[in-house]
Image 1 (cartoon, rainbow, N blue to C red):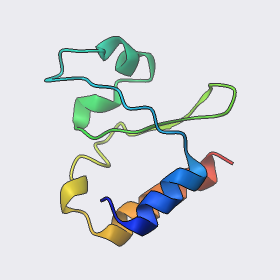
Image 2: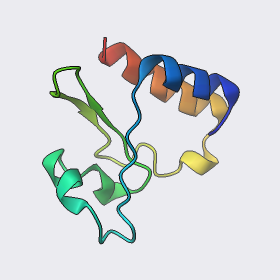
Image 3: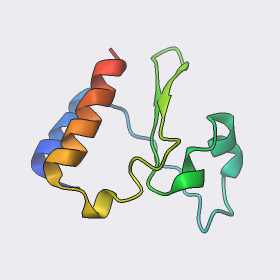
Length: 86
């Protein structure tokens, strides 16, 4: 998931804020505020507009298997989110 292509897309299109949820026992109030996207697996992603409005949240575990997803699969998913955030 840490390919150069993916890293470039992330750097150009997103501001990444990592939230440590530990073993689902830390910072869960943040996840709850955005519909609890970690419920179906980690990693999870939340996309906010520049004014802080929720645009998208992974509520069906879309990234739960990210380690097993192909590079292009991860890229395509992130690219679709980037288009939503524009």
